[in-house]
Image (cartoon, rainbow, N blue to C red):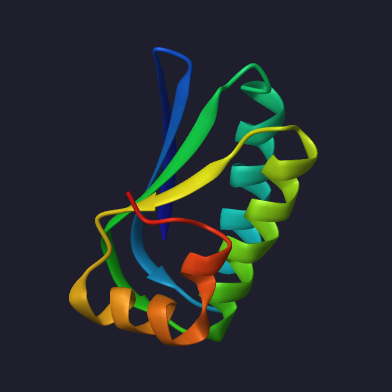
Length: 102
């Protein structure tokens, strides 16, 4: 799992690339949490899932955990570009009720 951030016009874009599972979640959490602290002035955070090739329940937990972290900083979080499979997982699990898809 590769995770990187871009900051443009007060929006933090977090790009995920690869498998989001129990093996990659620890490092992904650490990096995403650091992005939250580094870009605390963001007006919103957009997690781009375009290149996520696999996600299990650990990935769902990762997204919900980051939602809570960003919310503590007053930064709304959004999801964009999920694959069809990832979109189905997020829809069925109810993640979109917390983290809207844009």
